[in-house]
Structure formats: C-alpha cells, structure tokens
Amino acid sequence: MALFEKKNCSVCGAKIGLLGGHKLADGNLCKDCAKKLSPWFSDYKSASEESIRAQLADREENKKRLAAFKTTKCFGEYGSIVIDEDARVFAAIEDSASSLFGERKEITDISQIIDRNPDVIRFDQVTDVDIDIVQTQREEKQTVNGQQVSYNPKHILYMYMFYAVIRVDHPYISAIRVQLNNDAVQIPNEGERLRNKIGLRLAEYLLDLPIRDVRTTEKIYNNNSLKDVLLRNPYSMPDYSYGFKCTLRNREGIQRYGYYLLMTKEIAETVGQMKSAPTAPAVRIEFPASYADPEYGVLDLELSCALSADCALGEDFVKTAARAALIRELQTLASERCSYRDLPAQEQRLRQACEAALSTAQIRLGAFSDLHIEPDENGRKKIALMEKGKAIAAMTPEEMAKRMAEAQKQAEAALGGAASEKPAGAAEAPKFCPNCGSPTNGAKFCSNCGTKL
Image (tube, rainbow, N blue to C red; front, side, top):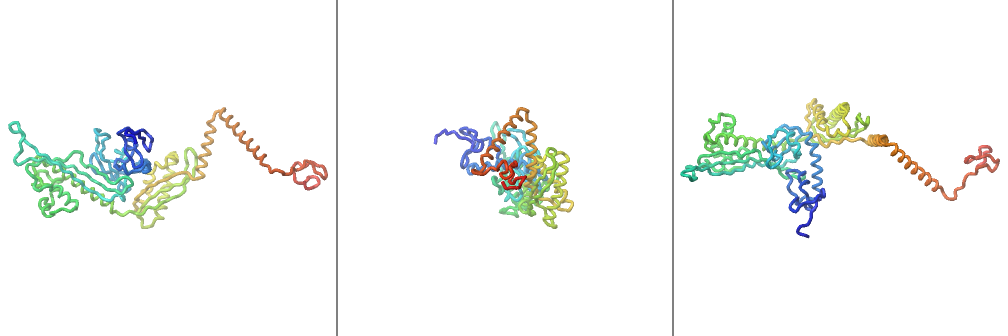
C-alpha cells in the first residue's frame, strides 16, 4: 500500500485529504459526513459503512421526532439535558456554542437547539447515570518584597466542574456526558479544608452512593447546610459548609456549589424515574381514511402509528378513541387545504388530538410514534393518472404531434404482429356460398340457405 494513498469517502465518494476524515472498519468517512452523525458518536473504527448509512438515515428521522418534542424539564446552562416527560424522551447537547469560540446561549427549550439535531432518546433506553464532580485546586500567594510567598495558613482556591454522564442502550451511542456549569465553581478557602474532599463525599451522601464514614459526614454537614445555602440568609450559613470555613470571600462559591449539587441530585432522581417508571405496552393502529386533498380531490389514505396509554378499559377503547380523534383532525387539516404529502409533518398536531381525546376519559397518552400516512392502491392510481393528465396538458403542440406519431407507429407495429401470428395452414372462409352463391361476408353459415361454410 502506498504511503500517500488517495482515499475516498465510502458514503458520499468525496476525496479525503491526507490527515482528514475517519477510518471505518471497512472504509473511510469524510469530515462532512461525520458532521451529520450524532455528536455523541465516537466509535468510528468499529463502525461499518452500512452502519454509518443507517445512522445517517436515522438522523433524518430524528428531525421528525424533534418536531414533536415538548420541553417539560431542563437541566444545565450552556450544555443541557432537555426532557419531554409526556412522550418519555429526552435530548442532550454538550455545548450551545456553534463553534469553538462561538456565542453561547442558555438553553431552556428544545426549540433553541433544534437546528443542532440532538438525538431524541427514549426513557427505556437509559441504563444508568453517573454524577461526576471534578475538583482542581491551586494555591493563592501574596507578594512580599517583590516575591510570591504563601499565606499562613495557606490560601487554596478550589474549582469544581459538574458533569452528568447518562449511559444508554442505543444503536450508536453508549454514553452522554453533559457539563452542567459553564464556568467552574470557585471556592477560595483560607486554610486547609476540614476534611479532604468532603464536598465530594457529601455529594455521595446526598446521592445515596457508598461512602466510608456517614456519621462524620452527617455531623459536619449538620443535615441543614444545603437548605441554609439556598434558602436562608447567606451570612447565617453554618460555620462549615461542604467542609469549608465560611467567609465573606467564599460564600458565593459555596452557594453555587450547593445549587449544582441539588441539580445533580434531581438529575439522578429523574433518570431513576426514566429507568423504573412503568410504561404501557405500545399498540399499533392501522385504518383507512378518506382525505379531501386540495390538488387531487378525495383520496383513500392508509394511516398507521404506534401509541401507548394506560387504560383500564383495554386496548380496543384506546384504539377506537385515537382513531376517531385522528379522523377528525384529518378533516380539519383538509379544510385548511393541507396536502396529503404534508400530513406526516403534522405528527405533533395529530398527537395532541389523541391526547385531548384520551384525556377526556382520564387517560394519559404515552408513546406516539412511527406515524405513516400514504395513499392506498386506488389513491396511488388516481394520483398517477392525474399526474399523467397534467403532463399531457403541459405539452406543446409539437410535443403532442410527436407523441401521437409514436403512438400510431406502436399501434401499427402491434397490429402487424398480431396478423403475423395467425396460425399457419388455417383455412380462410369463402367469399361466396358454394351452395347458392350468395355473399358470405366472412360468416360461418350462409345467411341465405344456411349451409355451413
């Protein structure tokens, strides 16, 4: 193999530079195709060309799932976890900046990051969550006689970054790591901490993770520090919060630490609910529906989707209520002159119609996915016939004359072929009756005397 062998993308065929692209298990991938993949995907070496094509197709389908996403809860700042509790799905984005030095924006709704096409992941695909609090530190020094010397006792600046790591069972994503705070939480401390890394141990205690000495942690924490930090006057905080001696310099940092610690706890609880909350089994409904299309008139459509809803009245009731709601919404869309081609993009409206219909019976709709709406066989024939008529109507006189001439040639060729296929040796009917001499006109019996010809 040549040292500088030219490479082409296995997906799009584009040329790949010497240091560009990614190596696949059975080919190569250019940077442009890689940008279209999930931001959480990284295992290029084990991926095949077929799996990359499947992921790219799923990324296009993901845009439809995002269109139906309704934000009910959001965690983080400039990297976010956005949740749709009703549809039992979530999406995550590592950084809202569009480039390395791009402008960041605080995320509160999926609409703010929909152009990034974040992966919509189902609750039942979540396997675990880890809260990762990364601590770094440096010593602050003072200048004495032009030299940097340590304080006595030492002043240490502690810095913390909070991460949520959600592990998933997904075709091409194994884990999602979101940084929850944009800037590091900085806590200046005069003197060593009361206990080494007590803040991390406190996080373990709050998140019900194993720690070595619960009683000591409880004693220092006093079971109230977190509430004091967030709810009470900051100047009345306990002397030691998260192992720090509280001073005027570090109260703000301690408050921020408590804020993110609460956020990580709520994320852990929410993901736990994702894993454990029961879901109704999904049922598939399929039915025909007449649709008044503004271009093709009345079309017979075939509609199908998957949905789940906890209902004591049974699946049949859910199917009947959902079908009636969908038919009514289709009639409304028809009155708004919506083309049948645009119906799949109206998934959110159709879902809302189902939700409203089921909520009247105190039933909560769960999943609503895999929506397919397309004409049946008769509808496809009608569309094809009308498209053919439109094409003929759009022809110029010259094109029409040329087409008629071609059709005539084809008809003459067909008639000539039929004549040539006449069985050899077949007797021709006589033109005159051999008995009475009357013209036969090609009949089998003489019309005058009845003789068989």
